[in-house]
Length: 251
Figure 1: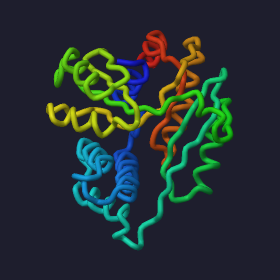
Figure 2: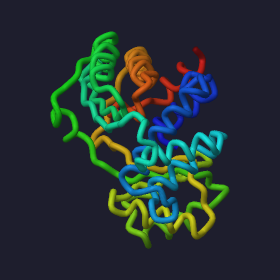
Figure 3: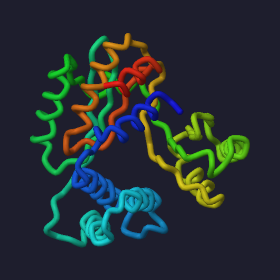
Figure 4: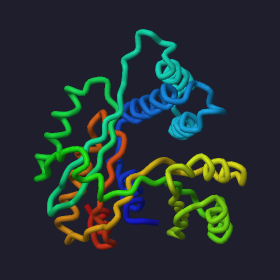
């Protein structure tokens, strides 16, 4: 498993990510709403919506909450707030590059919150395009190897046009072009694989390595950004070493 995924696993175990279930439901509801707004309320024909609903069910989000989120996104609830997606770019300590995706109903709240989270840990916001060129937009899937062994996953990946299939610690990761997302998702569904993670990611073209102390400081900044209510995902180019992961677990 990549350092990024291991870090996420450690955070979940320590309860540092989305500690409050209400925060999880809020983010999931916004993701469902955006998907419904863009592709309609039919789960069978709107794969992004199907994926968002599957994630919500995996977190035991109540059925009524899911249905309300779909209706709001599809415009069936005229009194619902209007959400928009905003991507922020910035720099962290030691020249690290960060991309943040958000869903918000109030841009005037989100922008200063984001600027404060960056500056608090020595980072700063950047203009659109200043950081994004350092990342490739990719489809990403991760699932337990118990659902499909690496050889079969590799064969499936080659067949459907994946860029890379990675064999990790009990987890298999698939990276592919953005336009292959639905094709790969459908292929995994056909062989009864249920991804633990699936979506579009910003993958750094080149990672940078920091010492353990600097890495931990950097991750604290990422944590602060992720804790903002409007944030959906944070992507960066810092390689999280095994030593840094060990230090993080020991905290």
